[in-house]
Amino acid sequence: MRFSFHIEKRLKPGGARAGILHTPHGDVHTPAFSPVGTRGSVKGMLPHDLRAVGAQIVLANTYHLYLKPGEKLVKQAGGVAPFMNWNGPTITDSGGFQVFSLGAAFGKKISKFAPEPEAASQKVLGSASPQSDRLIQQPRAPAVYDEELASQHGQLAMIDDEGVTFTSHIDGSLHRFTPERSVEIQHALGADIFFAFDECTAPTESYEYQRDAMHRTHRWAERSLKAHRQNIDASQKQMIFGIAQGGQFDDLRRESAKAIGEMGFDGFGLGGSFSKKYGENSLESALAMLSEIPPELPVHGLGVGEPSDVLLGIARGVDVFDCVAPTRLGRHGTIYTKRGPIALTNEQFKNNFTPLDPEQRVPGTEGFTRAYVSHLLRSNEILGAVICSMHNLGFLLQLVAGARAAILEDRFDVYREGFVRQYCAK
Image (cartoon, rainbow, N blue to C red; front, side, top):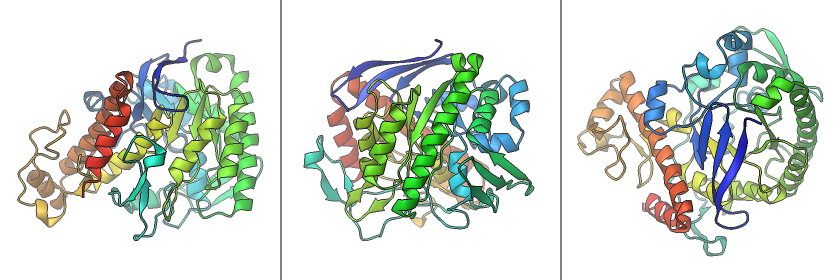
């Protein structure tokens, strides 16, 4: 086999671990964060810039590449990596999240992370053990309503037991995804890792619907796995990960994780909705699914990108993360700092000549001041969004690289506690 996952060090059963994910296009040292290149492009970032800030692997979107330019053209280019001039491993998602976006969430401002009431405290880990967690107000990057994102989905998505029928957001034409078709497209895209077709439900759906969708996801997972294994060439070059669902319900999450974990996938995708409730971090609840899967499987946290959430995932044994948040927030002028996220478009930064984050420098953004980038953003200069995006990606990539080093040196709990305490200092 041309791919494997080797765990170098595990701090405790079900805890943080450092490993190496071997792929045909290079190794990924975990924990790792994957920038998202939706259409084969990480917005505002050249491939060599991604390498400069520490990226090892990039994720692209099956739905969007299928519609434009089409998987056949990408295959002619040799796969998504050479097509986008990226010399390294790649991932593609299944298109399942688009089922969610096109269907239950269409026309609604619902995301994977549902908004919480402003007055609610959030449970964050400020110390090494869950028993010593405390309720504090955790700063989080603001939710951004992205007009581009809101307009990129079609106005129809009909889900049945066989698949989903949807209209293109580009021209309104009718299309259909089934598990077999999703796998066929992802074989053509040629990513090192791809995901089984699933139904990602909205966090507002009822228990009954979440249960039905979970069982549908399990049936689709079996069909996806069968379609992949029948392609001998692809199954020797590409890893297929299964995704567990269950929405916000703990019993469904555990049932789903156990079912997916027993199917024989090459890895596991942490799926579902990570909505916040009063006094409850349901991402932590979702991470409890991992106790139901084989401990040797690599784990991918889909759509997890908030710095504190990434460290929480690492503490529970997640190996790879992806999220559009770093570049989306960057395009709107928000950057991560060691002291929490800040919006550079705010008046207070107009005359602030300090570095973007005095406590953490990112290659390629050194020398730029908050005042200068604030000016660029206020002037609608593209460079402002580029600098912020590069900074945010570099920030997260340095965060996971630091976590890996801390795991190998038996000091991860101290590393994580120190970051969260400082990040929540406000």
